[in-house]
Image (cartoon, rainbow, N blue to C red; front, side, top):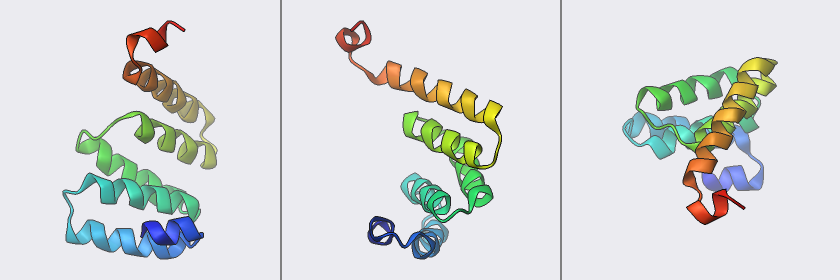
Length: 103
């Protein structure tokens, strides 16, 4: 699946990651990659559904918020996209070492 994404074959990646998610439903990496592939393939509603599944599993981090912001922006939901981007910035701030936060 990652090979297809890197080569620009997002639709093929969607198919691969959807299958992987069915085979191993507890692997959050497959769900996250499925969401990314869906976004790149223009299947934004499907990408949002994948992100919702990640959130239900408690797999929320900075990359999750960034991808969600991109998907929501693509769906013409600017207020929600803005909230997701703010959550991304806050999550990133929490990931930085203390000395980098004050710089």
